[in-house]
Length: 91
Image 1 (cartoon, helix red, strand yellow):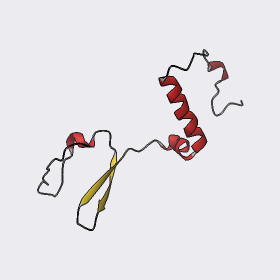
Image 2 (cartoon, one colour; image 1 turned 180 degrees about the vertical axis):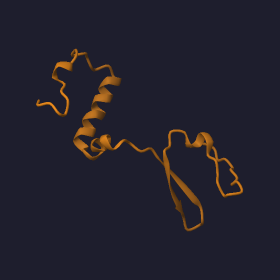
Image 3 (cartoon, one colour; image 1 turned 120 degrees about the horizontal axis):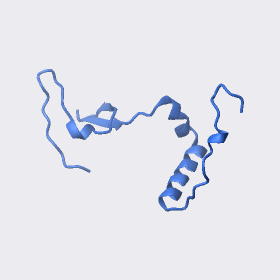
Image 4 (cartoon, one colour; image 1 turned 90 degrees about the vertical axis):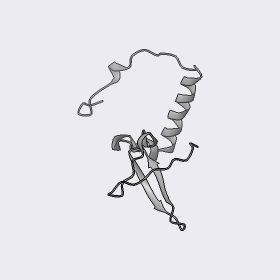
């Protein structure tokens, strides 16, 4: 957790987060019972990649592959370009 910072709103009530917002595409804003404003950072993903996060088996497989790659337990099998086809082509 980073140290707390004090920020001040400008004349229009806006607050600049600067580096604190690095890598964040949006925030969920919540005001709790004590009137504290809580910003929950979000990083959106492209719609075409959403399926992976909705498919637990595929996501687990990708995560296992990343762990294997980081541990050096992978090897090159060459190019698979000859197996690729456009979505308009027949497989």
